[in-house]
Amino acid sequence: MIAYDLVCSKGHKFECWFKDSASFEKQNSSRIINCPVCTDSHVEKVFSTFAIKKNGEKKKEEDKVEVDPRHVLRLIQEYVDKNCEDVGLDFTKEALKIHYGESKKRNIKGTASPDQETLLKQEGIQFFKIPIVKRIDN
Image (cartoon, rainbow, N blue to C red; front, side, top):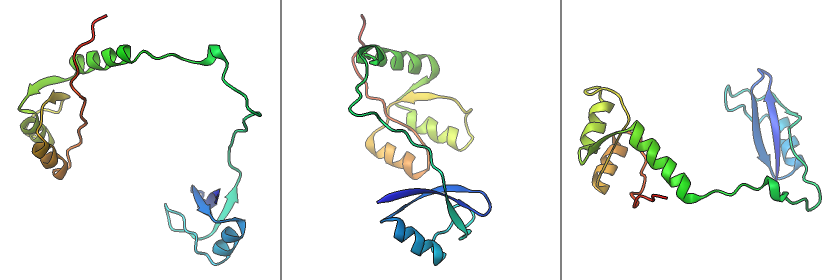
């Protein structure tokens, strides 16, 4: 497989994968390749950016960053606590109200059952779950 950076005659850049260079040439001459933005079939290859790694070059010790997961967890918990209103078990009800403009738009946090999560997804309401973990105080 080979990936080519392509550009259409209108200047839209995009990437396509091909079995080999002959596959690209055949598809391009048949005008099978279309721009995903404007569907123009007049495309050509352009130079792509890439990086070359030196033989077996390893990261230097001083370049490595150690991450303490407890510290990251603490930062996430602090951010959510400071920036989200806790609506508790009313999370689904409040998310629906916000979605339909019946309540002011704001960041909320709370609890939802699997059935309530399904309802929120069906209504097109984006949310993400953060597992509840015991606070780590160090």
